Image 1 (cartoon, rainbow, N blue to C red):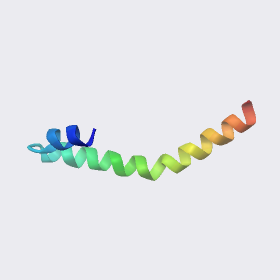
Image 2: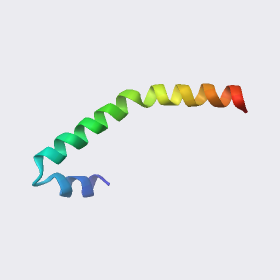
Image 3: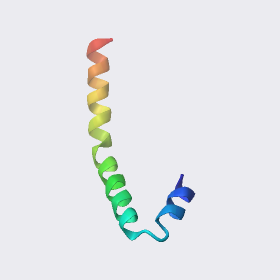
Image 4: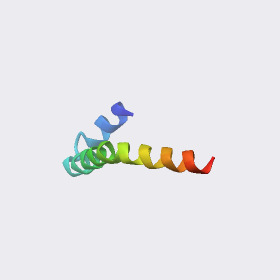
Length: 45
């Protein structure tokens, strides 16, 4: 996946900026998603 990403963004700086932004957002919200999923499953299973 990293190799494909590197190949795709090689000549496309805007695509690199977009993918970097999405990756940063995912890292930021991943903990909140895990917490909400855990609490939902805990209460509903």
